[in-house]
Image (tube, rainbow, N blue to C red; front, side, top):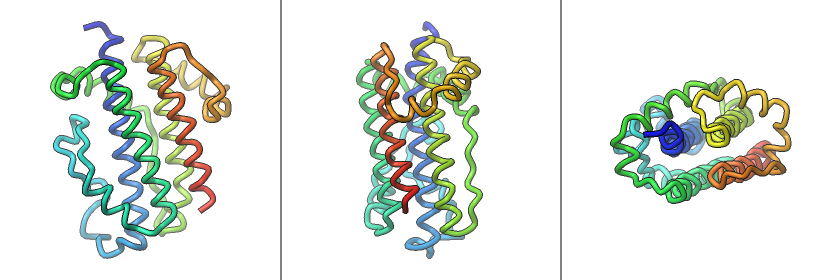
Amino acid sequence: MEEINIIRGSIWHVLNFLTLTVMEYAFTLAMEKELADLKGLVRPGVISDSEDKDAGICVLDTELELLAILDDPAIKILLDTIGNLLASADTYRIVTGLDVEELVTDDRYNDMAADTWQSMYYEIFGKNYESILADAVCLYQAVNYMIYICVCQLKYEEMDIFDVADDEYGRCMFDIIDGVIQVEDSKAQLLMDLIADIQLKSIKISAC
């Protein structure tokens, strides 16, 4: 299988990993207030109905329903972000023409996604609601940067594109997150549009 085909499939996994990252953050935040009874009983990162988290299969209906009943405006923004990621992952999969069974049974997709994922640096440092909420800016920055790495993998048809992605993102970050830059590859443009959508959520949550 050509490297570009594996890259295309691996990006679907990366989008799912990002979904789980935002989900973990949402539960971490919620456990400081409305879900405080769960704090200390279960780790936010393991709250998932994923049939096979390592393979990138995300079945998150229960989690989404639980978060949806919360009143916290920040949680609602995070839910919208999760919705953006899930919808984009589904559209992306359709555009690539790959089916779920192939994506989850061929380890090459997941292995390459894991290699890409290792370049993402994000950690929740906050110890209370206010400081955890302040970490949202870093979360959104990390998510957008990770998506842009995927954009570059598609643009240049190379997996190991991190130096180029870092340089481009550093020079053009504001144009990228504002949706100013357009790319020829339709799959890459889908991800560029996702970055712009997520940036809007970042602005909203910063105002909470």
